[in-house]
Amino acid sequence: MLDGKVALVTGSARGIGRAYALRLAKLGADVAINDVNLKAAEEFKEQLTAPTVMDEIKNLGRRSIGIEADVRNKAQVEGMIQKILDEFGRIDVLINNAGGRLSPGGKSPKRLADAWASSVEEEQLRYVIELNLVGTILVSQAASVPMKKQGSGVIVNVASVMGLGTVGHEGRGADYAVAKAGIVHYTRLLAAELGPYGIRVNCIAPGTITSSRIVAQAQAPEGLDAKIPLRRLGTPEDCANVIEFLATDLSGYVTGDCIVVDGGFGLTVVTG
Image (cartoon, rainbow, N blue to C red):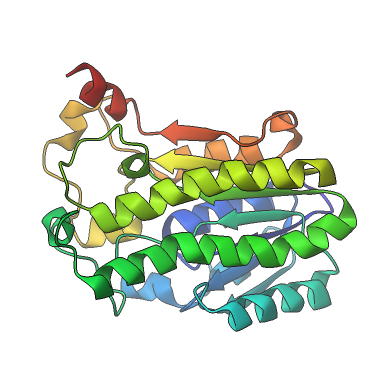
């Protein structure tokens, strides 16, 4: 369904982003892989079917390039988009996946309590908001320029159930929750602005997904699956299924929306 299209997936050298990139390639797209470390899979011992994600995509019969760039850096982001245009001549699909609940230096906090709403440290707050929200905005702005000229395009932002206010963590994880809430609202604003140019903008809000980082660092709370109506944690493929819907003409009349992918966990919080 994406034959002849060019996609960019940020944060896609491993984990959920890799699942998105491979799915888009299987649908026919040439895919640009972006990450701050194109060998990130090695850090979390994620098994690839080829030396790199770019090679995996090439083995599917599609073209691919890898670009190391920090989405928080405007100059690096603009350089990334230019490299894609130089290589492929266009950009049709953008998946803003780069982000996460990390601390400065790229490490994951041990507890959500590390960032209470009333006391989260400034360095932590700025880092998480820049990585998630500012990064999404900068890449969207840069990619929207060629998309406007084409008169077409699809942008899918990755938010989180923590940004929807349906998952109760009291005031914990405030840095991440605020950043992801901003992504949800930014999606709506961007969709309204870019709709007249033939560009659709949507987002997904995953719950706890068994990414390589979650598995390697045992971040999923014990017994969480028993609290989820579907009685299991989500997988990268669960999210990729929704990305397929939003990135293709299956969702041709859908824009400004946010699809929750959490197995119904938010329902347990709302209903008690």
